[in-house]
Amino acid sequence: MTREEFLVAGRRPEEDDTAAVSRALADSFAVTRLSDAINWARKYSFFSYPFVTACCGMEFMAVSGARFDLDRFGLSLPRFTPRQADLMMVVGTITHRQAPILLRVYEQMAEPKWVMSFGACTSSGGPYNNYAVVQGIDTIIPVDIYVPGCPPHPEAVIDGLLKLQERVQRERPGVPYRGRHGSGRPLEG
Ligand code: SF4
Image (tube, rainbow, N blue to C red; front, side, top):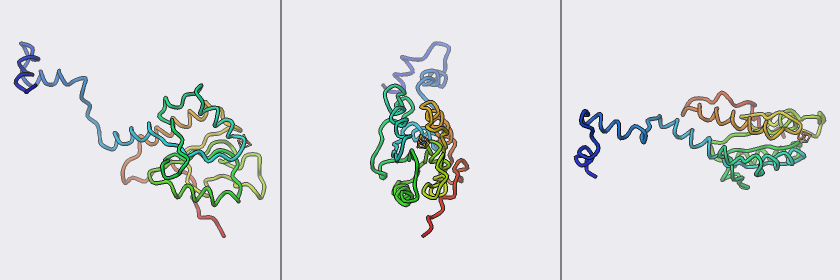
């Protein structure tokens, strides 16, 4: 339809051309910033890499099942290669022996990428305050969101996911991201 045909067909008697076009486009047109649109797409299209090591894995399976339906939040397909994932979910106890592997996998993920620390063990070592267990993965890699619990309830995981989505929506190109914790220090030795 040409502009002239549209105006003849769609214009009301009291309207001028501009008013007719504005009314016709009102519900079908949205204006936003490019960064907002990109962040909106990113937060609803996480591809997770589950780095699952211990008993929190059972709760990860529970929250990934049909009952809690993570598809609602755009977190649907886990990817078992870091090169196709942008959300690393570290689930379970991380020992010092596993730490270099965790770091290697993290480094293989392309930017932008985010990390969820799933449960007490990944966040602080949990009940294992000993020489074998990493006392928080944020000593190895940066963490964007911590989900508390031993193990966390599925609702807590969903809450963490929603908070992470809020942060991703607020990210701005070229502006340092303030929601990230941990030094991500290189491993010693
Ligand atoms: S936080 Fe609790 S449930 Fe999760 S891996 Fe550690 S001990 Fe197991």
